[in-house]
Every structure is written in C-alpha cells, then in structure tokens.
Length: 617
Image 1 (cartoon, rainbow, N blue to C red):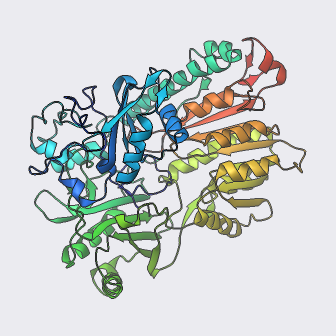
Image 2: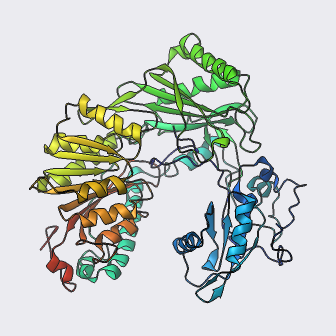
Image 3: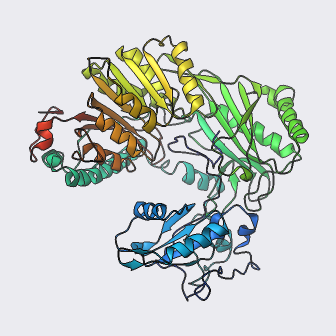
C-alpha cells in the first residue's frame, strides 16, 4: 500500500512514498521575497511571526520549509536539471529545488539547519557563468489553510512561494459535485467527446516530440513533414470497454466531512488547496459497488473507534488511509494504514484484534475481504522506502483473471487499475510484436509479469522481465508457475538501468529477433536504461507503453538522437502511436509507440527516410 496520498482517478505507477507534506508552490507573482528581508545577517533566518497561525505548521517538525534558502542571480536560461547538477557538484544535497519565473532565482530546502548554513556559505562563494550567486535565508511558505481563510492573500513580500490566492469558484456546488469534478472531471462530457480531447492531447505530445526529434536528428525531418508535424503515424484511439465501475483499486483517506463526522473517501483538495474535507465515494461512477460497500464498513468501524482519524494539519490522530483492490475473480484485498503516535505494542495489538473481530464477528462479517493488511506509517520513518505490512486476516495475495490467464497480486505490486482496458492494451502490444516473430522479449518495468507472460503465451517467445519491487518479482515468478510458463521466462529484481545493462551486455545466445517492451512509471525511463537499450544492437524493435505521453517526450527524443558519446548505438525511428483509454471521465490516457532501429545508412543520410506502409525503406 502506497504510503503517500490518495489515488482517486488517473494513472498509477509505483514509487517510493513521499513522507513529507509537499506544500511548495513557486510564487506566481514572479518575484522572490522582497524588501531586502534577511539580508542584514546572512546566518539568521528572517523573523517569522507565528502568532496569527500563518506559519504554525513549521512547529510540527515535518517540513523542510524550516531550512530554506533563496538563491539569486542565477545565469540566464538555466533549468532545473542544471541547477540540481550544479548543487551536486558543490557537494550539496538539497531536499527540494523550486525555480522561480524567468529562472533568475530559486528556493532550496535542506534537512537540517547545519546543512542550510553550510550551503549558504558555499553558494555565496560560487560564481556560475560569470554570475556571483547570492544566498539568503527565506521565510517558510505561508500555510495554504491560512491563506484560504484570510482573503485577500498576505501582503506582497510576505507571500513566500504561494502567490495570491486563486479563485476556486466551486463553493456553490454540492460536496458530491465538487468531488466528481475532482476525480472524474470529464464526466459531464459524452464519452466520444472525451476521446477526442484525449487524442488532441496525444497529438500535442507527438508534436512536441517531433520538434525536438527534428533538432536532435534531422534525418527524421521528412517523416515528420509527412505526418503533418507529428513524430509518426497516429492510429485511432482504442476506447475502454467499461466506462463505469472500472477501477479495481483505490486508496481512500480517513478523515472528516465539513460537519466533523468521520468519513472514508476522497479529499476535495490537497494541502495546497487548503481544504481537508473528505467526501464519501458513493456517487463516484468509476468505482464498483462492492468497493463502495466495503468503504462503508470501514467508515462504520472508524466511526465507532475510540481512536480519531489522523489530522495532517496538527499531526494528531491515528487512522490515515484504506486501500482496496476488487477483482473480477471475486477476491478483495484491503489494507488499513494508521499513524501509531505513542501507542504501545500492546495497544497496537489490541487495535489489530478489534479490526479482525469486526470482520469476523461484527458487521464486517457480511463482506470480509479475502486479504486484510495492517500498516503503521509515521513521519518518524522519513527516508524509509518500504513500510512493513502485517496480514490480519485471510490470504497474503489475491488474484485477477486477464486474457485467459490468472495473476497473483501482492499489496505493494503494481497492477493496472482497469482490467477490461488492460486486455485491450496488452492485446495491442502483442499485435505490434507479432509481425516480427521475436525469439526473445525484454519486459522492462515488468511489475507482476503480466505483459511478459501474455507475450510468452501468445508469441511463443522467451521473455526476460526486469522489475525493482522485490515482491512484484516474486509475484511474477509465481504467475509463471500458475500459468505454466516457466521454461521460457526469467524475472530479475533490481533497478532496470543496472540489471538491464548487465543482461544486454552479455553475449547473446539466440539468433532470432529481439524486441524490447517498456512500461515505465509516469516519470519515464531512467536515462541509463535508454542508453542500455541503444547500445544493444540486437534489439531491433521497441514497444513503449506510456501512461504519461507528455512526460515520455524526452525518452522518445533520446531513442531517436544521433549516436554520441552518451548515446551509443544506432537510433530508433518512431513508426506508430496508438492511444488507449484506460481512465474514462479523466484526462489521463495511455499511449503505445512502436519504434524500429534504423540502419547505419539511414542514420548517416540527410533527411531522406522514405516511409512505406509504416516500415522504413
């Protein structure tokens, strides 16, 4: 169960929990703090008046806003990555970096006062591209809740990074309408119109990629012109077979409604939005009824509990979150997350026992989950990548059926949240691979092995899967056994950029075609993975499954760049892009792109690549 935040809609990909409340927003006014505050003594943080509550959150000890610097006089045309690299070269390790408008200044936060003071001394002695950098302590950001309560916003010069309060314009709507706008913002549009909007977004991403590809490798210029400014041919979008009750997993917040009643549901806003109200998901069209019914049971239990819901404003309370997975097999997994505060081991054991009793002897016995997990999560665990979970009731795993196959799923493993649309997606991946008759497929970011195992079964090919979540790899191995596909599959645990490099650099023992299939998180592939794939000349085709097409543009460009010291090996050419709607009523859309390796002659040619029926000539 992911320890950070609530997922109500849209694409999910695994990642380490973010254990610090992220309330940093770049000043929309375009200027850092003004009036020269903090300049008199460089080792003193500007005085912060907490009497009115605008900075009260800093006393709760969970924010790097306490140790923030404002750095001025950055060189022109400097971006985030360059700033981050520069700080690393200076031996600094900031928690966060936020660059202001026009990139002339930035805010940087650190973990301790000692780190902040040491960084300030180093930065004030640094000249970057003839610009003498200037660092000074910066005020924390004003609490968004304070700003929301006190309109108009605080005077200019005391806004920190938040800028003026934006108009919400939603207070006249009912709570249910506001929730619908938050989790299913396209619900009021006909589904056909939603698909048109998503195609338009995909075209925008393909156009942005084309502009960068043309600069990175002019040999693709003619192809881009033939596709009217897109990097490749764009097929029709594949709609989701189910547009309601399609979510098989959600993470719900335990909190209170505006009247103070305990509710299990979705927040109307983030901390930055300044609204902590939680609303029941009962009216959400994308959530199945059995999931809603289980949410009601958890809400009943928490309402009767002597322990209050966790309050992220005060860092008090206990019950934080409920994760529920509901699958077509009828199996259900639930996970309860709580902040232990000062509870003893004996008291924690008592709470676990009460939950078990509720689902075995109490009202919860009407709908007990197949698997029930319990998880303690405290901000004191900052920096931990993994949070231990205890099985309270039932099985350790649940199962889902997909394309005639059965898959085991653990609490932390990634599994697509729309089963019927996933069948469309995986069938498309197989459709793109099939004409090339691959002898081996590398399934990169393989999760529980679903794509690789389906390809192994459908294409009768050898599959090597790579995944960094250990439990997911164990699931993948078990799934291979369940589906009788063990001889032709191998699943390896580790960072893709490490494991894949070793695999691709080993002598190849096969003579046939090799295809790479990548299904990365929303941030895209690590640059080292791209480099490893480029270096492996045996990979002739690449199928890229992107849950964030705009965020994948840099990967697309790197696959197409001319060979260089950083990117060895011949480039790939984008052939086809096919959108797949996995998340009806939201703006999110998956995109699958087929790439083919070009020849040495094509790589060295001027913009003359001919396109015939989607295959490079």
